[in-house]
Structure formats: C-alpha cells, structure tokens
Length: 218
Image 1 (cartoon, rainbow, N blue to C red):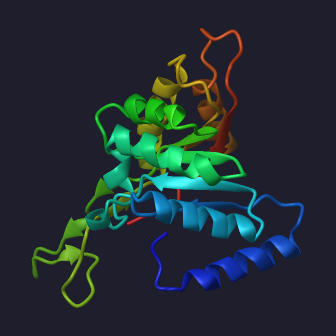
Image 2 (tube, rainbow, N blue to C red):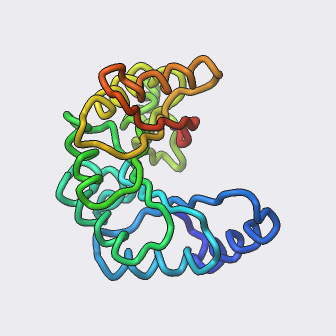
C-alpha cells in the first residue's frame, strides 16, 4: 500500500511471518497504479513469498489518487473490472476486491469486480472525510508543519452505512461471490448483524458473509 519502506522489506517480513506461523492465513493488501505489467509484477512477487490470498485495495480515499490508486480506481467500474482481470491473469491465490463507499451505487463496482473474476468482495472501506478546522489558525486538524489533508473515516459511526451497502450487494443475484462485511464492527452482535445482511431470506442458497473490523482512521 502506501509506505516509505522498500517493497523488499515488506516481502521479507511477509516471508518470515508465514514461516513462523505456517498454519495461519496471510492475506496481503495491494494498491497499485492501473497498469497491467505493474499488477502482474507485484502479484507474482508477493505470491512467491507464500501469501494465502490477495486483497485489491480499490477503497482508500487517501490512496495516492493522483496516480489512479485506491478510491480513484474504485469509483470507476471499468477500472475495477480491468484491474481485477489483470490480477486474475497471474494470481494463483484467491483474490478479494475491497470496495470504496465513496460512490453513488456500490453494486456497480461490486458487479464489475465479479465480472473481472474476483473470488470475493469486501466492503466497506473508509469514507472520505476531514476531521476539522482549527478556527484560530485556519489549519486542518491534524496538521504537520501547517500542512494537512483528508483521510478515511471509520469506526462505529460508519456501521449503518456498511450494513446498508453489504445488504445492497447481497441482494443482487449477479453478485454471486462471498462477501466480507467490514466497517464499524466492534462486538459479536455487530458481526451477527453483518452476517444477517449477507444472508438475505430471498436466497435459497445464501452466500457466505465473513466479518472484519475497519482499519484506517483519520
């Protein structure tokens, strides 16, 4: 994803972690510019160190949008489908596509991921937001050297949005892959609610719905 650490360092740590915990699954989250050869290269390199799955991050609102990464790609169904397809051309492990909520209709990008060959989708990623403005200095909060930026909002406040979007995707028969429900989960009751939204009564053979807690925060 976004880091000032060389890729080689991350690969070394992934390899060492898998070697130390061989019975535990490691899923690596990737955020890459929308270029076929770059996706092919990084997928091969991370799979070579023993990962068990890949998450394609098309969701981060602060994901180097000027290079078409993160939500900048995740808001364009054509790019979601195309990049998922590029990854599936070379991937030997399951591919999960992580979707951004910063879009009018999340089912459009979910369907695009399925069309690209995704093995599963996860949603939601964080919501684009700004924490606040210091009224004395007119600087954003937080800021470093009078410089600040937007970021991704998550936690309990986004749970209703996440539940709604998981339900929207689960109700679409053409989105026929497992759904990982993410966003504001902090208890087993929250997890149960996401499972229920991923298993609509209208389906005779419900899709699996797994849960995970949200990550990035402002």
